[in-house]
Length: 441
Image (cartoon, rainbow, N blue to C red):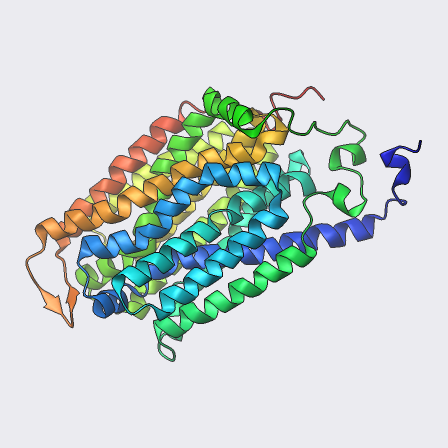
């Protein structure tokens, strides 16, 4: 009886490359929309306060609704990616997210907007893990740091679009129109994912990447998913990575994604368009920092030094934002860029997690580590708002609460605490030397 390998047509490298990059392009487009959804509330915060008459803590809770659901879904997203694969997981996620975005844009009450935001968080929660699972089977281990950095670089184009470009777009269209259009685009991506994405090279008749390199393919899941998940949760190597993402990227996204623009408005007197330049620069720093961290890690053959350096740099920048007399202009631009750039070192945590766990469980490992990131953001956004409300003196302009410099300084100290947690976690990271510790090649 002919073997599976004998049944395959002759290997065509150009066809393989076209398939790999087509799949990556579709999934990265979905991921760019994930970032747009994540960061857009910072630009429309005033519109949301005005539309729903919210307090600071209510606004923080509305924005964080995305993060609450995203946090709860990261381990289930890993299970889905490891069992169903990226194709079905991401297609269904896009369908749910697109519907939620339309509801958010059309919602007439705070409750409707919150439900829409929750559906967006539910839908997009599976995209990141599905994309990284796809990358793990379509790209070789020795390039995983770089392709992870490229993934974050391109994903952050969506985040950048949610800052300055979105602020400019709101000069012509209402925030409601933007979110409805975004929902329609997300639904189109759901259809493309279902039609064109495949879970592995073998699904298109190619050999696996390891077979292309003359090695044995990784084994598929051997036990029920819940037993495999228990093994991932018990693995000590994943938890320091969890705390790095919890403290560093969780607090950075919470601040840049919601409170940075109000902070610049109230303390520096900037309008929304001018303030969005700072968040755009932070996101550009995050994108370039991710790309640089992935490239450096692959180049030097180590993971831990890059993670430690990023965490330490982020802690120092948070201290500067909270305690130094920075202002709009050069010092502000520099601090916001460095805030994002240093946080970009987190990208190596996913490569490190993948290399500390059996390859067939990479989705669960990435999902567990990514849970820390969004748990941190879900806690910081409303906590920041609660601290601000405690010191609010009652000033309102056009229905929007205006806070003082002291209020923001206390809020920024929250970032310092979370950054310290990240740095402590980075010191406990296990070095993998860019190879899977559970596999003998």
